[in-house]
Length: 378
Image 1 (spheres, helix red, strand yellow):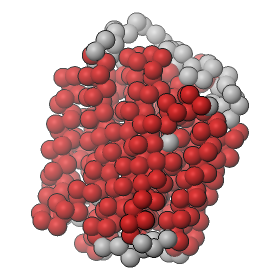
Image 2: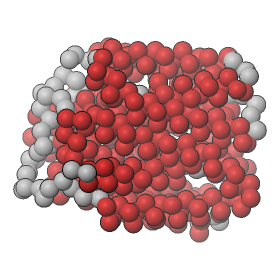
Image 3: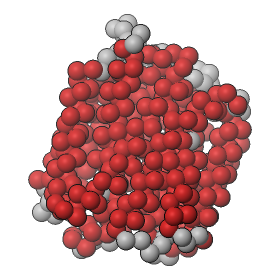
């Protein structure tokens, strides 16, 4: 069964490349605003609009997982990823052309994310929670890598250099997935209607709570990563570092806390990390020394993101979720998570006219996560 680690590695690289290619624009939003004469709301769309399209494509992705397997879904996503992120370097003539390429890339994320839990569950079975945590950490490590590397590339080679680098990176990960990605075994014909699948999933009282936890976690993560560089007087490299260490923390949280929660109690650990994330968010706002802000950013990312893979695994292992409808269950979680990723950063960008209100808005998102974890019945 050693091949399961090859599959995990290939999936991890795929999702890492997606995250890096997506978030390479995060530290450059103000540069993009200046270059194309656009405001905060428009520039933030380059981060948030991907989540909007996840909402639409999560459902067909879930159907494909249940019908053809997780590899097929991730392959579709990787094709969109390469076409979208690969074309940005050739579309620098306007903001709208870059946004269009980002939208194409956004078509792919749902197919990758929906495949994540079913792929890890079939290969790792009882250890799937750890595997989901490890693999999902790739997305946030990608966010961190893209955020810290892109300012240095931009400084030497400009925006086209940034997009060329990540186009090549996405292509390499796409090729590796084609070669190494594999379902554990050929699927038997297993059909369940969408209506019946949803009915089975809704047998659990927690069926909608987990997706709404994802809604607020994803929305808070994207909103905070866009707002944090503006809360203090950072230079462009410090902005990239702040975003990078925060997202590195997200990766550590996603990696480590599914195991911790499984051992010590999901509800207790998940609600506890939500409170810690809130306290660290408040600390980031009021503390000034840059070194301390780096540490706070890292820890904030750890505790903010810890709940997402816990909620995803919990959704996939709830009463009523079976091999016949696991794709639908994943679709429900991923789609609602990314409604948050689409809506909340745009709302935060609008609120950014007043930094105090924008800061308070993200605090409310985190408090909502805590309340929802408390509402879970296990």
